[in-house]
Amino acid sequence: MSFTFKDFPAACDDLRRDVLAGLAARPKSIPPKYFYDEAGCRLFESICAQPEYTLTRTEEALLRDRLGDIAATIGPVDCIVEPGAGECAKVRLLLEALRPPHLVVLDIAGAPLAAAAEPLSRDYPGLAVTALGMDFIHDLEAATPWLPAGRRLIYYPGSSIGNFAPDAATALLTRFRQLAGAEGQLLIGFDLKKDPQRLHAAYNDAAGITAAFNLNLLERLNRELDADFDLAHFRHYAFYNPTAGRIEMHLVSLAGQHVTVAGRRFNFALGETLHTEDSYKFRRDEFSAIATNAGWQLAAEWEHDGFAIHLYRGSR
Ligand code: AVJ
Image (tube, rainbow, N blue to C red; front, top):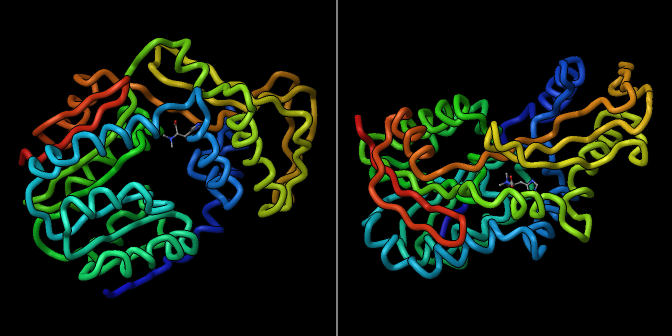
């Protein structure tokens, strides 16, 4: 039916500002949302197809196998809202099962989002699709005027929430709670704590795709911020930190070196790290405690092979 696209500007200035701030910090770090340029999106798709990385396939199988039960528990909804929708592939199962009149998808990469979302309005007759190119982590409130009133379901799959430390996850889920409104629900997928060797392997695939994904961030900075990172002088290093309950991804400098980024010079000592991602893993009770702190109440849960899908309703 109808398709609407709104691109919110300034994503480019954000990259420059965040990267310069991150390179000035100790330890150096860059937010993982910047992995997803065009090449990064392709590499992430390829990660999801690696035998060691089961997260995405397990979630899809779980959703597919339990779809009838999940849809019946959710009940009728007027609108599905998916932050970080990317390829808009995951939401199709839910659209088929729930048949809502509206879908609102959000992603930091506006143009690819629009390209992926537009076909949905043709494939599902009677569905009005709105695509918002925005950094929802910073600017979620800007989405509110675009959401139809009524029963909203926020859909946040893929353990994207794992990129946020517990306090930041609570803050984001609190804003989801406000965005969802009084009758709102949240369907969220997250990766469970499991054998650390299995986690380690998932972020150190034999084909080297995760390493390429991590290093692609430097390629992006070379292109978009006129930087001069030598990719041969940085090593992908990912490990499970059981104390913090997270996978950490780093790019470790293999030499003492200087790098210029957006006209500024930065020194990397031999062995110094650029921390590029945290991917938190949760026990079911740890996760529901975070959601409860954010004003949500657990309504139902589904688990398979180390992955969980939770359904929440408002508690206040
Ligand atoms: C998209 C954040 C869920 O943490 O597993 C995959 C990203 N990074 N391999 C994850 C990722 C390296 C992924 N999330």
